[in-house]
Length: 289
Image 1 (cartoon, rainbow, N blue to C red):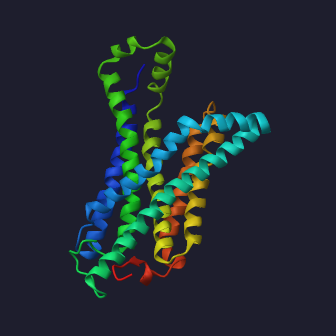
Image 2 (image 1 turned 90 degrees about the vertical axis):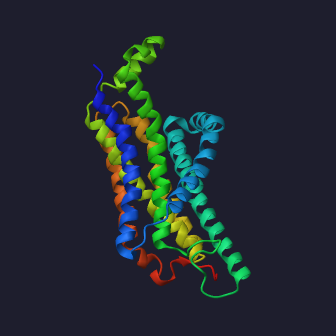
Image 3 (image 1 turned 180 degrees about the horizontal axis):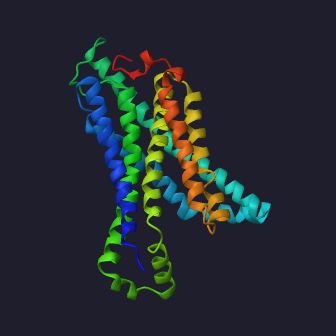
């Protein structure tokens, strides 16, 4: 029997994404009296898109051949380990690299605007916009994770809603595909809560990695970018191993979501101690740079 409450999974993912942006806007407004401009969240979403496109291309071209080669050369488990390293590094390099290049572009634009206007305090309404500080960098990270949650959740939401409203549409599918869909849509309701849970902690991870990439630009320290790449790599590297070894286990979801939660909490701890990573009074891209 299909469980219509499972629709709370993708809808919960989208709600978490939207709420995270609203939360940060309200928090900034309470602290500064001004709402965080939406353009910083959108900027984060664009960075996510820039990072995800090459990953998709790689999945359709080189990922499977590489795994087959590794498995034939190093055995099934060795190939799985190498696949995990590949998946982790790919995520770290593309996602943190996109954030780093995006912030570099902001810094360069800021510098060009200063040269055009003369050195001095930049106007609030100048072509490059406001100075980009820590709050704005967090907004970019929130947008990065929020857009991911929304875009990943939307197709599943539409598909589930269509099936729950009209189950007869499944009759046009092959029998094995129908069985797979019915099995997926007959799971316990707590699975839906796990999807929203995972997105909440994933957003924390995205924010921390994005902030590290931002600080790498501000302080011109590639070590910080390396830290962001390493953090994101550790977050995604276990995915193939979890899928291969735990997919049939009833504890698969618990273990994977617990791991994401731990990584998200590490990211939150990092953000709460960002002044120990880099001096707070310098954490800003100014137009006079």
